[in-house]
Length: 594
Ligand code: ATP
Ligand code: MG
Image (cartoon, rainbow, N blue to C red):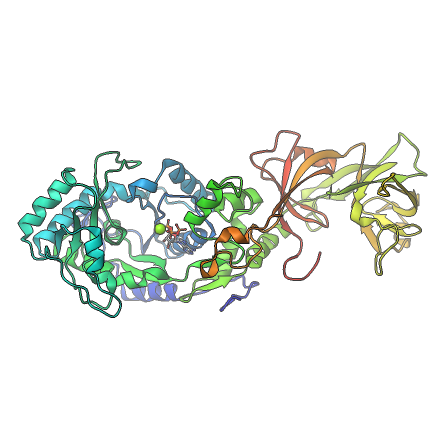
């Protein structure tokens, strides 16, 4: 399934081809001469400033048109991680050049997600949070210069005509009849476009490169288009907006970015990136060395979708309960699911960066969470499918205190206390009227240990009129209490978790499963809706050990024998937590059972 599956147990931060490029650049002192006056801007602004204190500058440039997903986490960890490791800086830049789809809500969610992942664009000296929309003036002046220098022209063809004359992969395109219009005329038209004197779709600004280039991106690409749309930050100030391919290299150069990392789809756009920066360097806007675009493989994660647009459809069509639904592989969803920033960073370190696209198993993400939580999540007991166990030789109205370590390897985390009493809750699945082969849990005549309590022997059970078991009976062996002398003498194979009925906390638990039942939900053009797992969310009422009443929102626990759970950060109330299943103890999808 995955072409180049990374070793899921690798824990070192692997070297990679991007680090090799940076190592070499640093060895050659390629970027050592750069200057930085603290604000993005064209080269003349920086020339009198001090040398740039950042050895490298990277950037994470999301478009604020949705919530970030696990693929973005890979890019965030990569860009911020490189800046951290090389004594550089990573900028958070909102690539907000597309007015229609962008909203403040998304800007806020992105800021939260990057912070939560543990990265910052701000330190004692610099605050590198930027908006591409702040550069609209620069983009415009540079467009004017490109026209003056004969590198761009206003094309008055319709979008249809432009498409028709672009040619194909095997045939050259043909020149626009407006390609050779005098620069003065193009300048005038661009000014009129900006003033709103032309209708949408009637004029565009195009670079003048080569209509016969084998690279379609170089066939006089469109740089600017007319859009009468309000922008979330600049309002109605502009009615022409730059194309991504024009804006992105300029944004990088204005910010002194040294290494501009993007996903492989942009490999064919790199010649345009370089062409634009070379031309603008000739125009004196930028100094060499110019930012270098380097492509890496995007993250594709099985059983999930990494496209903001498709994630948005899931939300809009109500297949999930919002962007932060715990089944979503958005960063907000993973957080609510119980993922830690450490687990996500561990996952990103383990998958590394490669130059060829492949699929990473969802199991690798889940394993990173287990590996992170194993050593730090306190243990607790939850009976998810409660069945009453009556200890018939235990006096009514009395109880006995029991205790267990909060974490078996971390005595410093203290102990949990809970009572043993006559009526207890156990898991329904831990009792069998007639035991299948190899069943070591409760059945008539068998003995088990109730963890951190006593050994009990099953003496019978009760059924209701429908034949359903409603209670199990057992007798306690009074000298078997865990931790007391002689208790070890009882050798039993079953070791069950339980909670005393009188002390149990009733609570809601959400048992989540994968959102899709297909490993590649949207592969081969399939409508991902057809791959939705109808049983991805189950809400149950459970019995929890009493100490869990104090669980703070986002506190994570290992519920013994079940998995890792988190107190939902939004729905939990004081004394009344609601828990989400973060991940089971073992991978139950790969064929292994719990
Ligand atoms: P989407 O298609 O989900 O909207 P995008 O690439 O259009 O993704 P941007 O907001 O433009 O989203 O992405 C910001 C940065 O995150 C870009 O540098 C992009 O390359 C990177 N990125 C996006 N998706 C992935 C992914 N699956 N794996 C690695 N990096 C990604
Ligand atoms: Mg995009």
